[in-house]
Length: 193
Length: 156
Ligand SMILES: [Cu+2]
Image 1: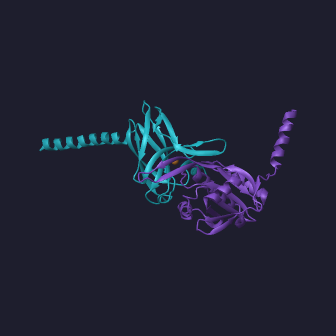
Image 2: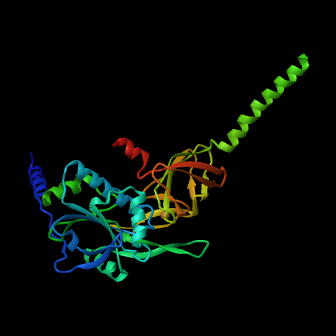
Image 3: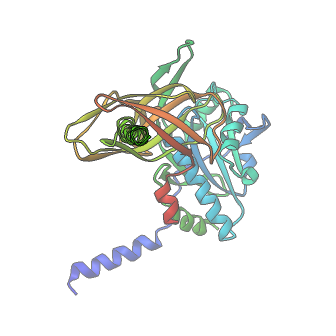
């Protein structure tokens, strides 16, 4: 084996041992939001001491956000199978003006999502904007469709993200929501346990 | 008597010959739609319709648009990468399908967006969408409401 082969093996082991760095911490910051049942939730306080898997969506999005949401569901099913609990799923809308609690509840219901450890969040636009700013998610209205009756909906260009947050409220890893590897996040969750 | 029987037989044959050709025209074997499915959506929300369009003819055909009773509007859309980790969606206009080729409408790529569905689309429901092509004309497609494509689910 040549030297560079040895180096490669060393780097590989290094990679495996790599811990999840802290990307951002909520610290004392918290946000007043509402869930899909219109119940007030203080985020991230209400998920304190839990590992949180979070994605950022708008329900008018028919492709990328359902993909991300469906991946959350696959992660949830996998954790159930592996009997890993103490994990909370959160989906935050960055389009709260359209995504009322009722719209979010219907979005979850029509997909038969298990909401026993999954919360959908919305709130004031200024609050959801502050949350996504802190977590590093961008969402900007772009193209739109105008219906025959004049109703107009916007499509956001947005960060396609699922995030792993540890029980201390620190963001530990970012994944692409629509193409996330379930094995990868499940092994990362185990590292945080 | 024999002549009358002969006439009847001729009539039956004529019908049998006519019917299949008419069917062929409306089925349009030049263009085929396969693996059609759509996402669940609550009433007034949006769904996306995915399928594989196969052009068996020897000329390029163009998907011009779609129609359906299931939603207020139906538009051809495309999800696109904005930069490393941002995604957007935009109207995609017309789509050319080259001769003897397949074009796949799939999650993360192209879809027919069903805007403002008229009723709840539950998993397992069947919907009908009509695709409009430049040469093949209108083609009906049946789609099942699912939360992921068939191939993926079969692999699991
Ligand atoms: Cu679309």
